[in-house]
Image 1 (cartoon, rainbow, N blue to C red):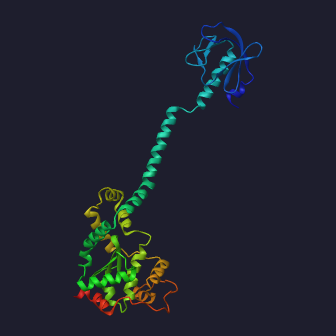
Image 2: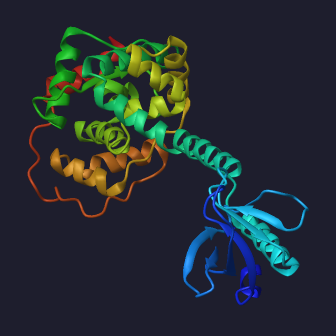
Image 3: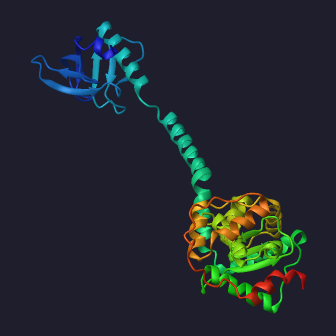
Length: 338
């Protein structure tokens, strides 16, 4: 039971002024729903004062004088000690139940800061990442991938190149990814991962994979596996997530990534374990490129001791279009020995 509930039936006589200069009138006062109800002797309502807004004009004197507002637009004199005590108790109870503006303001400020911090932690990085990846042009991606390739070469060895080999790798990429592809196949003397996808469509391939393979389908499998492993993660996104929010923001606003970041990421990539492609994704990519699974699975077993389970081969029993001419295949197998 609230304080107001206890006094709901309490009534008392009082003197009321309709204005500070008006004559005093005999009235009856009683508690209403959060109001003090003032009625005349015929029980006709004269005024309803809000109890929370009620202001006592004198602190301890009797009769107690109350006003409904700061302007004291009306006045009420009460001599009944029980009614005075009741009004004071109800006013205190209502004051405690009201929200305090200062506390509410501090709570709202704290909540706003918390929400802002949560947005900064959970929403902003992903939003910034999506925006950056959507606006970085392909030539800039190629520039980044090429720079990373340069930083990898102390460990992979210098890129193996020749005019004939460059033409052969171009035809190899077109055979696997379509004639309009912008992907580039780059062969290096030594790479633990067999094949590695970099930003800008750069795919780095270990020369030993070509030298040990009897069939270009095996090398094609490793190249497609490197692409399949990154099918759901842009190589540039992988770089930016490793580098942090500052690097992402810098790339978005200035179009550049610090050289030390590129170098560090390249060193990490060249020594890290190769990301594993999803089996279904790789199977579908091999089938789309019309590359049989068998040569790749056998070569993968020799390379890592692991034979990937790709399920039924859609190319089994199907004719395989030419992957590379004998001349191109020999050129690529021997490119790093030239």
